[in-house]
Length: 251
Image (cartoon, rainbow, N blue to C red; front, side, top):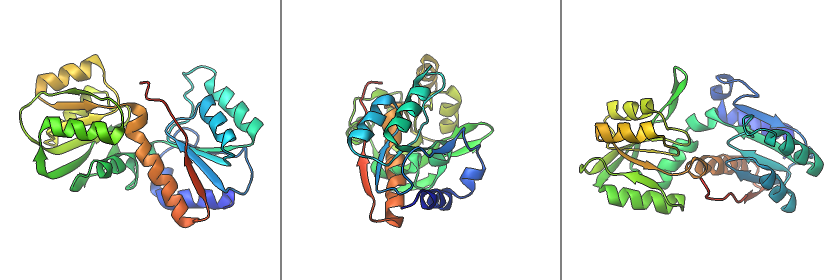
């Protein structure tokens, strides 16, 4: 696959979601590697360790959900230096992947085996609205908590704030840590809210309004969308080799 073919494929997959957001801020392709791509590595985040892993695995292109954050001071510059040193390209796509039909929210719903997705997460007035899924056979809070733990393969934090069985679940993957996000889920009639970050305020508010809440990590609530993206690319170019790069459960 040529780099130009990769870019064409991403535009085909995301469509108007790319034009809705600024290139460089919410998605970008850093062309530091070979023009022909044979092996793709993927992860939620890019860090110096991820780049070194990619080099050890002879990766041509790293695909991630996040770019290196500017406020993790100096890390983006080090990542770019390593990418150039090892001649590896990097593509990240943030909000468009959150809202795509195959993206972070819907991919997590599918992993959790919801029976129906009735709302895909979307952007509204500068923030993410939750995706909403339904279990036809309502679950106890304990059963949902166990299922999320098994799917994410990490310990989760959870707050049982209602005895009601859970049929309708709201999800914002990653940083759905605002009380506004919980209010949105409440207005949509959700029995539980699942996300990847918490604050004192979100925990208090969930308890106050009786919203069951389960919080995994930012990294592992979003890896499913990145995996789904690279699988979509592999469908188009079936000669590609795809390797998941290892991130720690340290959040």
